Image (tube, rainbow, N blue to C red; front, side, top):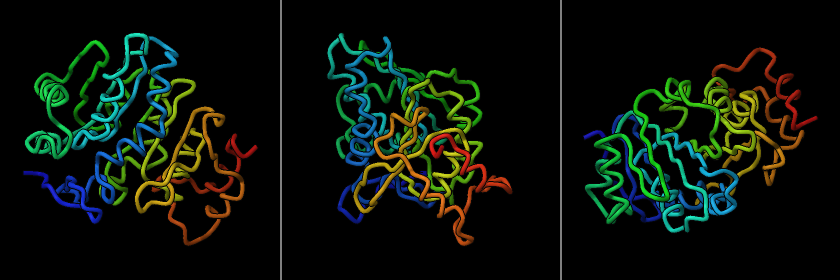
Length: 267
């Protein structure tokens, strides 16, 4: 087994990766964090109802035990046919967490139709209902993003931390995400570190403060268009980048502060 079920400090069940040594959705637990941090903050239901296009594309980077995908599907499945169809693309290289979550059923929200959908996804790499098309992309996320078209409306960025998965928190990684983004795309993640926000900024995103969740006083939201951010970072934030003791993205250029200052949102 590559994962085990643990209980968070808040009392919720969660999944721990034995390889990475990290708990997925620590604190408030996977179901609450998936709904509040990703689905609610991205205004998924409102955007599906607005029917900006016939389909709304959500990239689920870091499927894990499937909590974010489950929460997104739940919103889509309860809407009427007048809403846009959800196209959900989940990226993952280790399916052990989802398999273990399914084995624990209701403890992780997997019962009934959602569980059948997840099992079909594991077996065939795809599951389709009248309201939702769910696709699984296995393997390296950055390689997979390189093959995706530029049409993502929402991105849930939920891989393991930079300590366990450093390649997915670089400028290059967020630039790869930016390449597949539609003109009004938004991106959400649990990290609020200066290094993460700087990597997003230099990767081509407008960056802002995301909602608090559990013990986290802030998360991070990003957008192609700064007007889609409720609380964009202002130029005073740049003082953090100038501090010599603040960690930077691993691929930060020598002129990182100058490039950050030149970001369009600070103009």
